[in-house]
Amino acid sequence: MSTKREKRRRDEAPMPAASAGLLRFFEEDTPGIKLSPQLVVISGVGLVVLALIAYFLLPVT
Image (cartoon, rainbow, N blue to C red; front, side, top):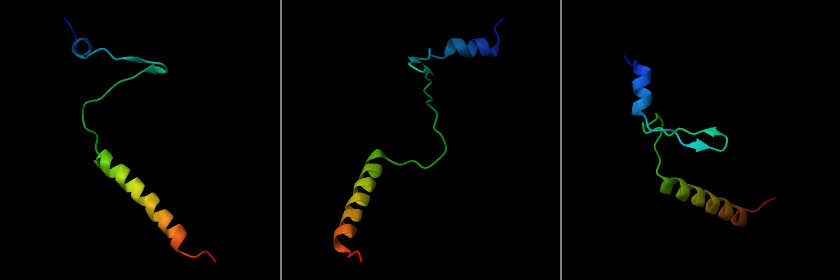
């Protein structure tokens, strides 16, 4: 008779090996804020542009 653990091991796909050990991919969602990659890149570029505008337009005393 097989146990739950043995059955679960058979049903799971084999884990790929990585250079520093074993790597495991999870398909289930984790809790937290969901942001699209485009929003993150646009926000970063916007912050850099804002910093450059502030640097060149605001006088430093």
